[in-house]
Length: 563
Image 1 (cartoon, helix red, strand yellow):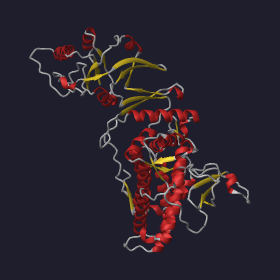
Image 2 (cartoon, helix red, strand yellow):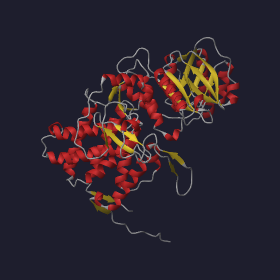
Image 3 (cartoon, helix red, strand yellow):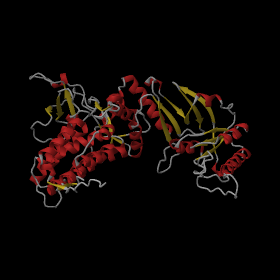
Image 4 (tube, helix red, strand yellow):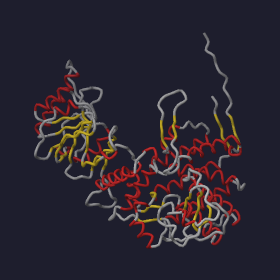
């Protein structure tokens, strides 16, 4: 019986893909989905497969992009670039994606060539990064590690930007303090260059109140109730610890890094078990108190160790191996051969712990650079942001203020000092002004995406900050009576300010650079109401957005294999 052969289909070649209405419509739809999720008041999305399965509720870019079914190559380029950024920096995913879509949309309206557009976008990107890292930047705040105010502010800003967490103000404060305390636990007392942080293990707990979350020094290993009852009495002295990365199950297919020599006619299983018991005898001889194994320990070896009052815990998993090595100083043992005495580590003590319906073996360290953060509402993003901040101790003003300030500064420099942006590469000042306006409009549209209830967006003509007011303000309005503070919380409406609607026509003005000393003092005093973003993550997001937009704008052909 002959099988049916399908004719080979020719590949489809599309020229100038961005000129087709279909592709533009798909980009618009993606932008609309992402924009509606942006910021602390972003709308949640429910994602599910049309064929059935679980339903996911989220507003985070990581989850959105992972669950959205994207088929067009241009959309795949965009989503993949954003996912790569988020995998490295854990934040600013929506910022990056929306800005990229805005840039593509705005630049196309200028009708300049792709080569000119890409060249000028690169100049503007370099100008932005240079300004945001400079001493004169008006939206950059140093992080003072002798005070926790700005660090707490950073964590709060991240938590409140995730509406799916559904945290109250009290819960946000509690979780923020815990995350910061856990982070400070991982900083060693004697630090060199570069700083080598300890480790924090985030343990998610379900069915508990958010305020039940806590931080404990050391490592928590989840155990069954039956195993907890079999634990021996605690010692009063320090514990000697052996940490095995190889299996101690007696499974001949997994001997680790070593080899097993078996004489002719001898059972393989018995030979491996004898070798395991020999390891047990050495552990007894070396006065080991605790054996931790990443994989499985053979029941006979477990019983042997228990008879000699050695506590044996297996199946700890690969995730805990690095923290256990850090907390004990033990080197993971990867073979079934004799154990080197230098491989052993030690710990201060252990105890049992119960949180909700879960039971844990709590290994207490001598030095607390490793800790466990029990979170009843899990959020890894804040933790990753703190790690980035200690490497680059600056934050940017949030709440849309950095975007509107940067747009005002670019407009001013484009009109007054175009030479600071332009290079001798054939681009004219008129072309620069066209692309700069598209770039600034993309930044302002991004800031405007924070408003989801039809409110009006304004910018002040002194600092270039973002201000929001409820929809339908009266025609004869005294703005200080309606406005409270700017998006980031630094400036009050009671200062001598004038406002203009965002994206309205007005003459370019120079926003105040260098955050005034009095403003810095206010931020330290009222940090609870301050909104900030991690500098490193935001700069990376800006770079990825512009470079991805340039890549998509430069596409001349898309070739699709339909086979």
